[in-house]
Every structure is written in C-alpha cells, then in structure tokens.
Image (cartoon, rainbow, N blue to C red; front, side, top):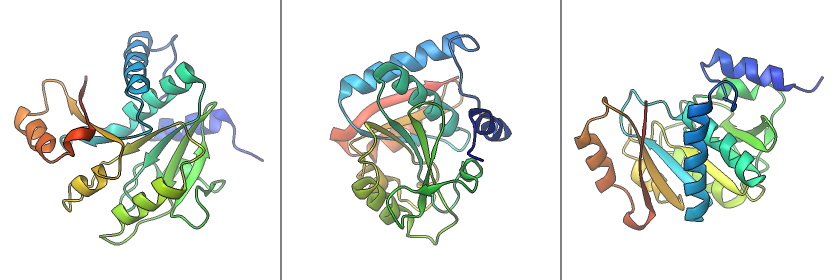
Length: 203
C-alpha cells in the first residue's frame, strides 16, 4: 500500500516537525511566504542553509519554506538532508523511497503536493559528504525548480566552505537572542562572497 499524507505527517511528528498551514500557524506561514518571495526574486535554484550554532535546527525551517515555495510558485521543491554521515531525516524515508539519481546514496520521498525530501540511505565515511552532495546536485535535481540544502554538520570536519561552493547561494541560519554575532561573522567570512544571501534568524 502506498504511503499517505497522514503517514508522512506522523513520521515528521515523530521527529518533532509539523508543516504548518495558514490555519494552525498564520504568523509563521506569513514569514515563510515572505522568505519564499525573496528566494524566488533572487533567482537561484540551489540554496544552502548553514546553521550558525549547534542549537539551530534547520529541517523544520527548511520544510516550512519549501512548502511556502510550493504554494507560491506551484513548482516542484526539494529539501535535501545533505549530511550523509548523520542524516537528520532518515526516518522519513521508510522503505518506499527510490534513488534520486540512479545509484545515488540519496532517496526521494514526496510529501505534500510538489514538496520532496531527499535523504541519505545510511551513514558514509568521512570525506564522502561533499562529493556525494556535488554529484546529486549535478545529476539528481533536474526535476526540481527550487532546492533547499541542509548543510548541518558540514562544519564538523571543516567542509562547510567546500559544500557552500556547490550551491548557487547560501544563507546562515541563527536563533534570535541565542546565536552569537561572532559565530555569524565567522561563518560569513568563510562563505563564497558572491553567493551569500544573508542571515535568517528564527525564534
């Protein structure tokens, strides 16, 4: 039996994530729509989101923005859980996934409408994350009009700079009143200058 929307909602809920609607989160939805409009205006297809601190969770925000992009544009949108060593959304994949680009380590799972989650099958060795991500972005995302890439964990081995270089654009994600300015400035200095969209503060 194919998975249903309620199955996906349940799996996301188990991870502490809920994709909000205008009815149950109007203020959050309004902000995500505003961000979606800015991303559409920027004209960049592949946008990386880099958490500026360990206490910043990118997946809930990226999925909300992805849903807003779907509603705004009517186009296909992908959220890529890019950390092949410690994927945060591997539980959403289940057993019904298919490879996004043939024998890639990433699988695709469609959520609501035209929003898809691309998540790794399993943990890989250090040094494989950036090459696998680069391969996916070259051969596995033609179907999508917008691609949001979660670069959580790439700073552990100093790979965030090379991962960011694979993006059309990057944004830093911080927590208001928690993330330190020095962390934002440090990450900003390590980003490709012409690809930097700015800082997004949540909370």
